[in-house]
Length: 334
Ligand code: AKB
Image (cartoon, rainbow, N blue to C red; front, side, top):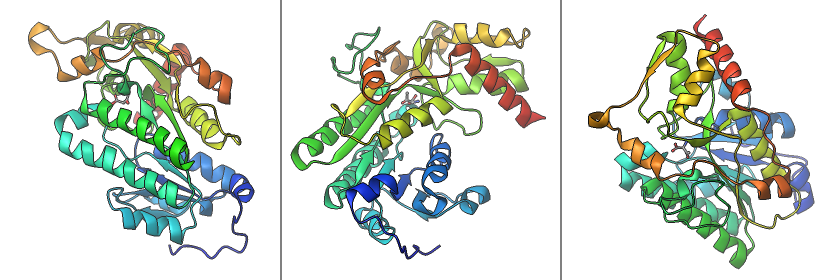
């Protein structure tokens, strides 16, 4: 659809705070559709412009505007910002850890050049920019347990390097140019309706589909690989609370986390509902490349600053998460 002609345009910061027009990039990914739905419910369908480089499914198109946006094309993005009079951008376009490791050149373009474009637009057009970071921004020398916001960060994956670059550049633009840059380091996200897009934590979603459809799962991580995780609903709520927080926050980048578990602990919780479910793990000859990525990440996060500054609090622990995932995926196969 063409950009609408607004009669009540948000001409001041206060108006934008109450009635922002939001652009979401990468909105067909694991998190985008849920976030777009939530924001449309808050601000009106026509005020949330979803975008991606793929065609959207019908139900997505029906609920509000959807445009093609290649984040590597600055003028294309600028046109959308100007035509739609955008106030806030949620930047979700990125290659995740496993896909990035297989195609580092593309990861550099999408994750870094794409982010640089959006950040520069935020500066020029005074946009608020929310762009998530990840537990992948930490590295093997980071303390693994209760990892703090401010700690050693020497990622050794291309994904982590691009995301740490974005954190630092966002902070620089905030300091130097006053850009309202906000970011949270997402853990692995569990979702039933939208598939994850090629990350190292994807096993924690795949396992449910296999448990229900086949009763068995071949896990690509070892049974004792402990990683921070979160249910999608919590992630969207935390993101909205962070994005919409009305006053400037003391820091740009926050850890957020809900639970940490290993594949073995997740299996035991699934087996409470599906006692015949079995799992196998790689033997020493068949170690998957994602094991090294997972081993370089923290096993738990200290997210007390997010709890203090924007009221972050999860609702889903392991039990509730597993029950919800199983119910939803069961309903899909029936
Ligand atoms: C991945 O596994 O790459 C992502 C992440 C933790 O950022 N889910």
